[in-house]
Image (cartoon, rainbow, N blue to C red; front, side):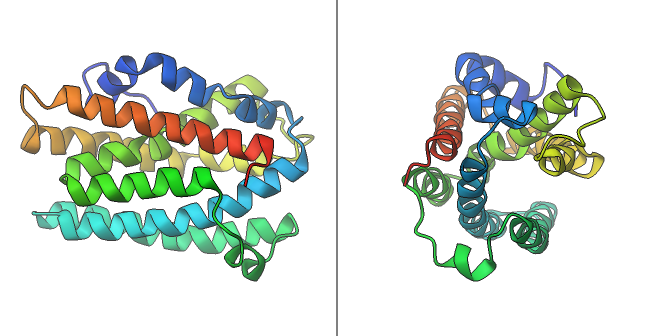
Length: 225
């Protein structure tokens, strides 16, 4: 996925460069790439990611409600459907790591999981559709950047890396296209809802979302409850 310097996302990313670099270059991510991440850390992350995705599906349901055009409603509905479809794939992948759906459903949300997902929902309820999509952007677009970066760093032969399927998923064409569509949606919403005074508030929102995503990596790495 490539983005122009003129996109809203590129401006937000540049304005939060330090926080963004800490997110995409977190030690959890680096150790995924070289295969040295402890498996217990990855399982902890997977279980919390299951709970995370449930809340993100709710966020896209909120995006449908917040939409004022049919195009935006369709985009949000497609996002929710994509997450719900992904849940099946995610559950199967987690089963391969010894985690059943019932087991994950019974997990308590880690503090980092609650913090970011409820932050997104709160900003979506209090703000407009642009606020909601900016809050979602670090997750959706960030995973695409991380996947592509790890794939480039590690090369095509990841067979010895236990996390190669995770990397391949987010580096793959389907997910890269999804992230590119999110970049375009941010621009469409900025064109219709933005103004000369809007960027500062969106930047603060984006920066906070990035930090909460970084905390999610830290939760996985440290097995934090």
